[in-house]
Figure 1 (cartoon, helix red, strand yellow):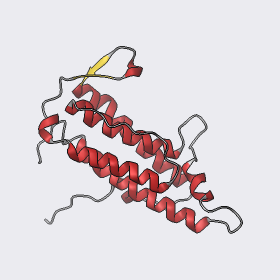
Figure 2 (figure 1 turned 180 degrees about the vertical axis):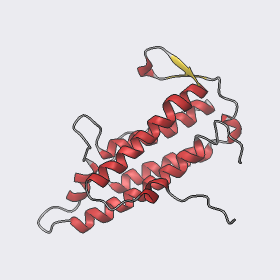
Figure 3 (figure 1 turned 90 degrees about the vertical axis):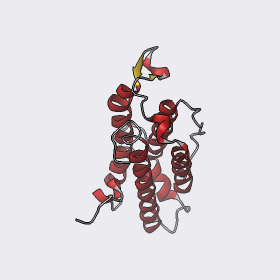
Length: 180
């Protein structure tokens, strides 16, 4: 599908980015394992990275991943006007975060283009908007896209700050390159 619409600018890019985020989690695990100290309990380095923050008033890495998943599943459900899956927000390991990403991508896979295309005018409300709303188009362009990528970027930056070997291609994921 090459047409630009609410589906093509939300669901496929969020799926691609969540898959890339899962790959970033693999690099976190590898980095943590390589830094593990013999005299500390297994997982100490992984836990330290999962709880790391850029600054004290921002969410830790684990919460950044949870919120990115929440943004993706919430947007898909709101735009398609279907029930949103509920997650417990109790992940404490890389494996549990990867499972959350997998659940989110699986949910996004259930959303068909025809459920989202043409929903530019649907009324979107969030509890913390104080009784106000946006159209589907305003929600996607002014809130969803910046917020989703803010949390993914912050998760990436937290790991970079902590020495995890990541590059731009880890963030962007696989590109749909074609032969000339």
